Length: 478
Image 1 (cartoon, one colour):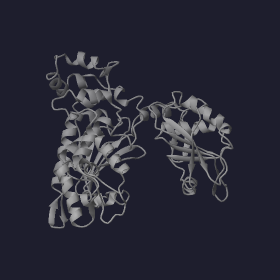
Image 2 (cartoon, one colour; image 1 turned 90 degrees about the vertical axis):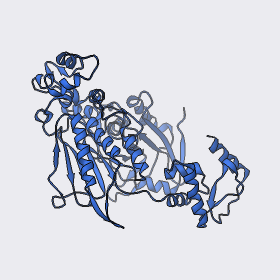
Image 3 (cartoon, rainbow, N blue to C red; image 1 turned 60 degrees about the vertical axis):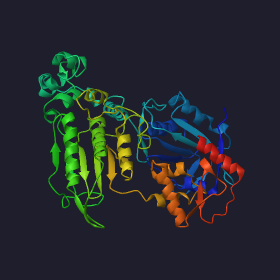
Image 4 (cartoon, one colour; image 1 turned 30 degrees about the vertical axis):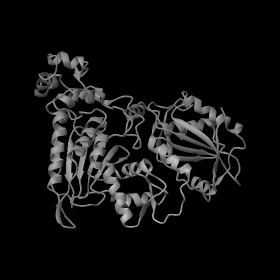
């Protein structure tokens, strides 16, 4: 099957040549050996994915780059063949040739996705992307760390050097077993659930049922809540409102207490607004879902606690560990990987479980923010943690959103308006358009009637053809 050849403009060519090499991007000359190319492909797949351009020269002295691609598609055959060893099923990557008028040859553009499994280069070793470098992973510890990061193995099943009585005879276990059906003896049930192995409790068992998990798993099983009286990007000792609150206990109790403490601190936060002092409000359900997500999906092999930082204009929830498997900040709302499957499954058996809709926590948080017309939470991945940022920033007005949309579109209808403005009601959206018409900013397109009604900028000179009318009808019918 022939590889597609795409034409790029001079402007697009310059953007490629000026691309900053880093965690998500790399550029190589066409002389790169296929074996070396496999190192970089493995590194991108084992980290967070990215792009690699083959056919770009860089002067060692001036650091200036130039376009010098393959003379033909066949000249790149050896490079393309190494894809089959890394991606035998033809998934998680794509490649195209790029052609630019006036420039030499075809540049090979390779897009690699973050993969569920570990990708091994042709030398038999996996690589990992760190900044602009592809680093080989040879040590057993390094491979174990990579498996944990990818979600292939999980620390929740590791045994803890403790007496099983820590969970077989705890109040948490006894109370829990009174609720499940059928009732069972603690030791028998815990072993059946693989929470005791080799006569030792595992991490998941300690987190769920030990009365003091923090004594057995220090520095990796508590939640700390901070209040910083500032809007700065980083809090400081000077802006700390009170000593950090440390929340301990089993994770079922931790989640509830952490949410309650956070909500109370937020409710006590008063700032000077346009009309005097006013309370800062966030949807409680968003706080609950984000804290729950942090507790259930963090990497417990990382020796750090969960941090909830409350600022004047936002709440930050930092969860130790990188995103597992093929999950990225871009697909996290649509894809599912349970790093700690035992925790997720068993805590859902508790009375009034914190994860009622398994796998929908972050989606619920996003929806709660949108109902209050607050901006979506921001998810960022740091070197060893994931941070969810809930900002107290309102969306622009519906009128502003519509007019911003019209800067790059010649028309808008009610369904598009509801989608971009996050307004569920057709009548409410209609009133937005009416206000814009009253201000001479929009006008109805006279040729469009009934369900085809659409709007354009006032005094917009762009006759609507029958083809466009039919196109709108097709959109509506979809």
